[in-house]
Amino acid sequence: MRKKGILIVFEGPDKSGKSTQAKLLARELEKRGLSVLHTREPGGTPFAEDIRHILLDTSYELSPLSELFLYEAARAQHTQETLLPALKAGKIVISERYVLASLAYQGYGRGIPLQRVKDLNAVASGNLKPHLTILIDVPVHSFSQRMKGSPDRLEKEGVGFRQRVRRGYLKLSKKERNIFLVDGRGRIEDIHAKIVSKIDKLISSSGRGI
Ligand code: TMP
Image 1 (cartoon, rainbow, N blue to C red):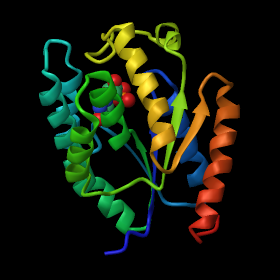
Image 2: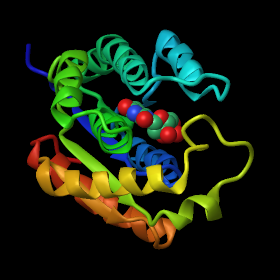
Image 3: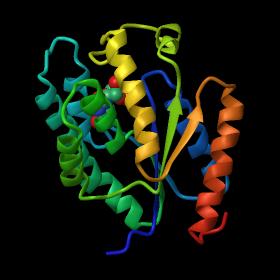
Image 4: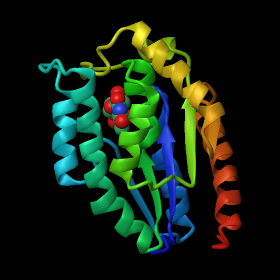
């Protein structure tokens, strides 16, 4: 079955500004009359949102492998129940995080061999690949400057974990295909403008026009 929609994924370390940018992009594309679905991982279905609660709950100490399986379980459900139907319906799907996050966090961050994470990603996603992944990079110290409220289980991790995740993302941006690396330190509007210009090209090259 041909998938007609476009899958755009936002990635980056915690507090990189990806939710803000995902919302701004969704609003911009909707203004142009395009049909957009804005979703997230872990989450995007009632069951996957429940898994998210478990994953971010600070009262659990999860082993790296059980953590990975939970992200992949949420991903399998999200892919089947939300992403594929929306793509089939021709929507522009904007997801906050997808397979790259497991490589950065569970692979580089937790130390699970990358090939193992890739294999599980492929199973959970049914090999669905984003048309474009926008990676918003910020230095590790931005996290403590931007963090407000009480941290979740992942946000409680130390600076060493954050460094590994950030470096992992940067390495992945060189190795993996269709990644657009954006410096997340600029003004929100400037970052948004860069992203819109990239997406304009992506949408016109897909033959959909704007
Ligand atoms: P969020 O804060 O971007 O909503 O994501 C929740 C946390 O889950 C965030 O710290 C990144 C982490 N995460 C992983 O560790 N692996 C994954 O595969 C995904 C999707 C998220």
